Image (cartoon, rainbow, N blue to C red; front, side, top):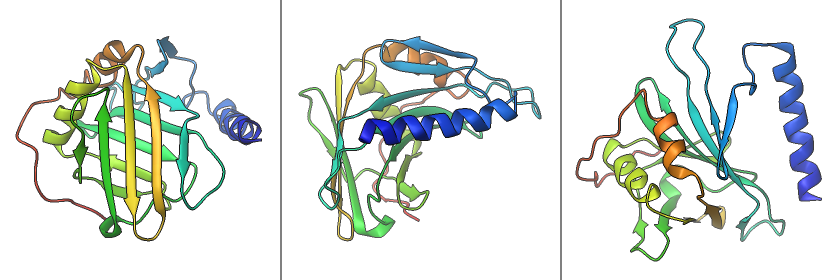
Length: 189
């Protein structure tokens, strides 16, 4: 059933893309489990590259169904961004804590982030946090995300990272990730 809903969603998105030949996934190439998109912005002429990874291993304590989740790396206005999308509400900014762990390395909790998109999308855009995330991503096989929320329960997702090095290189070529100490404040909205 969850696969049928995801297929219907993908078909509806694909139908929209068919009407506008410039918003398309025709320039998508695989890298392991990742899909790398390469497009050029028709306004600025700059690349709009990104890399996406989808998992079926995502759940929420307030929702009995297992649903897909997506991890995306991209540049947004020349800034590197990690974007996590879920098929259910995961919380509201000040009432949630996001943590992640790569393989058996120590995890990172209470990372700087913000929540958008009807409380279903988590964005990590703090440059130091993105640098730490991408640095560990490039050397790992598995990523586990955990979100604790006072109003939406607990969410987890597990991503298999095969092909991550090429995905990182392609998605973040236009906005290099620089390592800085992680910020301590959370910028939630």
